[in-house]
Image (cartoon, rainbow, N blue to C red; front, top):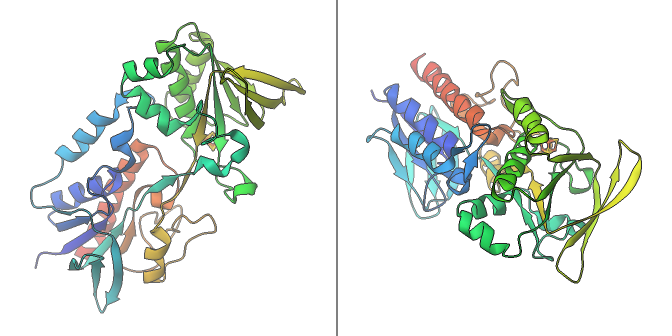
Length: 339
Ligand code: SF4
């Protein structure tokens, strides 16, 4: 009998899990609350470390989807229940399916930078987030036009909404250090005369070629890395942003004027993940990401047999780690359904 798997979430993790499960011979439905699939990736201009375009990455993932996979978009899951040895999954619009296994790939949401009021997001026009900058990069013309007067100085603020007790997020979002380095280089390529600063607490360059990119940022592009946490930013009469930061290496306070300030917004569990895990009685850890059965040995299993997890719903990950995790989840599902 053909086994049926429902994958909840059609970002990179959900799409890759579905493609892998279909290749393994399972009947798959992927359900997505948005009208289009692709998650955050569809809005990301280029990926680190090799500047692969987000559009090309998504096309490549989508190409792997078998025509037998049923894609149910614009459907918010409102019911998820284990009944004997199968699951019933239902949506707000009356959609309902039964499945032998369920994979949660609900992903992340970006930290809402308005919550760090002292940085001025939503107050000053020239304070934007890393996601806003990606959208601007999508059109070089748009980026340069927005700054018709070409900012002479651009600042990047690391750890916005991550590693911050005040906003109740103790975790490191893992990918924003390397994203800042990538975006700083892209800005220098567009505006070679600009001075670019990265304000950081620690630099976490965990992946292959990340350290090299960081070195290149300093040596080839002369990007300045200043160790210190921003205390506040204000706007002057010309619309420049004046940032106050304590340089913790030199031990002195600095005031730096920039034309554009980019906040590296961290990752948080997606809204809606908690509601889903509550329906199943699954544990979330204190940071809100889903707790896998074992953080070393069973990273795609949960405490409920037949319920699996993949991608950033269990914690921050890069796109490449997300895709690898998705393929690993498909194997964990196959192992469960075939045994
Ligand atoms: S990856 Fe870097 S910027 Fe992001 S939270 Fe971790 S230390 Fe901060």
